[in-house]
Length: 293
DNA sequence: AATGGCGGCAACCGCCTGTGT
DNA sequence: TACACAGGCGGTTGCCGCCAT
Image 1 (tube, protein in one colour):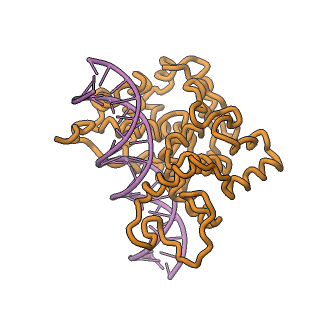
Image 2 (cartoon, rainbow, N blue to C red; image 1 turned 135 degrees about the horizontal axis):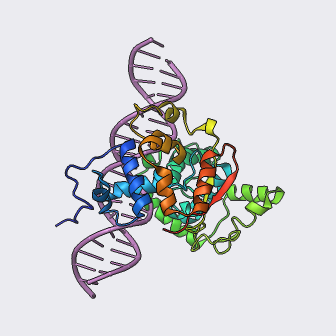
Image 3 (cartoon, rainbow, N blue to C red; image 1 turned 180 degrees about the horizontal axis):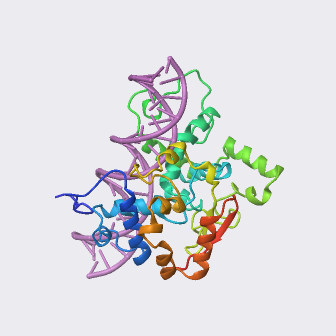
């Protein structure tokens, strides 16, 4: 007898989320907080699996999410953390405020892997690629007999790396950069897992629940032309747009009093900060501290 | 201008882990 | 200790837009 599915899948909707569904989810969570994902869809009037709701909220609807490409520094952080933690994306994400594991995972698979290979670094081992004339095949097509799956390889690699900490070429590069300048940020980044510029990668979450960092995105540089071009009401998905745009898309102004709900749940300071964020148009960072729900 | 290939990313699936009983 | 359940995590899939031809 198999495990019971997380929810009754009969009649449940799958695929991209519609603005209406997003609205219901946001409305419900802002009103009731995050609790019991399994029961949430029913209570919120959604024909979705609880897991799907959780994913949608944590990856796209949370107000503390940053959007857009990872900055150079964030990318370096990801590479370094990956060299130490392997594919533990959630752990990596916990060290990058406003970034989700899914986002980092996607970024790794689509951008960083290629970049590292171009630099002659094996994205799995973080060590220099062998300088043979062998044609570099995709990960799962490496020549040569039965091989472990990528996951198995990575696990093995991780085990090795846990035993022996080796500074990768990239780390050296970054450490060199740290010597040249910007020491406040880079200093000690790769020193150890214990102390890392005031945070411990292993144990201490970088963001406290009450401390959410929101970066103002340049409104003219929305993540991709695709999302901006599809921002008309004909597009049913909200895609990667950030909350302010999202709320706009959802037509909260006319159909959903977002401010009222916010005010009823979060305190005035946070509401003011959120408002400030929503209206800002430069690239400054604003610290928004929502009270614990 | 049409179209086929490719890349990026949102979302799903299934397994794992933590917690309560 | 064993079991059930909910939530979390990582791998994978499939859609969609962009770009080259």
